Length: 352
Image (cartoon, rainbow, N blue to C red; front, side):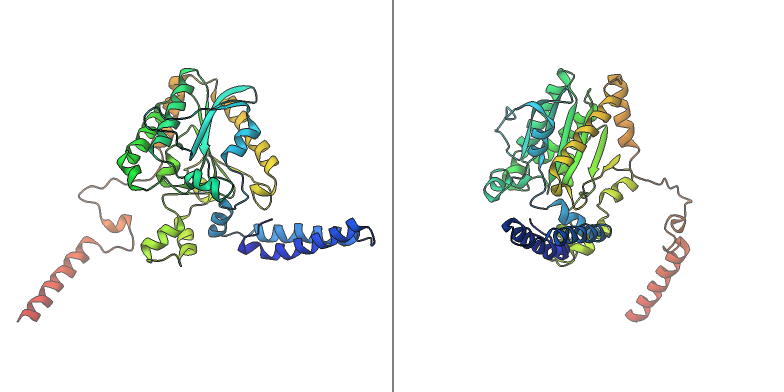
């Protein structure tokens, strides 16, 4: 098992547990009571740790190296999954996987970001950072789903779209924008699940749906805490502070109306009980599709457009509006004019 920094108290308990299990296996001494006692301590300590996680710790959990990725869920919840490759323009992007399979007896198109389970596979998958051809492949699969009236399932887990020069040359921004435009009007249900990291346009490229849900220990933001820290403070030392300021957790996103639901994970994270997490996802998809599939296609599209149109907040101002009515800590127009006059007088005195 791999333990994160804030899980270190659990590591020593697990080491003790393994030692007593070895003694028990040898059969010379009865240590069943001791094993039971340590297991209870582990449960209590885990509850204590995971009841008080801060935002940065949630980010760390979303990146846990043992956390299941898209292909794991796809193979666990799908029957007869057939992967489809290529965007028919340039090549097949390994950072996004997708194809056709049956979930709970319903034929679906399912796709997601794939990071890779070891160093070699992570390089092969480009660490889950898609190029334009990845988003164009995803759009091709969505159009296929629309043609044959199959719902679309999107699993999101990416540190962002690939920022390389070659990606920009092939139209990275256009590919993501095109997906958003087409997904808004797609005449078939779309379910989106943030299963790990949901960073910036890389996540949005397959993240516009009728229902968007986040796993409990995931994050969704325009920028990662490290990148935010490097821009504002010129280094990564303030990543924890940046994570708090960004308000990027599932609870934050739900409170701001940017996602529809939070899916609970097993205590300790999705990696502690992968099978249970896959079962939870499969049942959630079944429930959501039961609500969306009967809807008229025109109504489905209009509801999706209305949903995104309501996001965000704005204020309309006229010429008589006072800025302090909107921002109480801001100076009024009169105060600003007075300050300007004072500045002019000071300037005139200095010039003399």
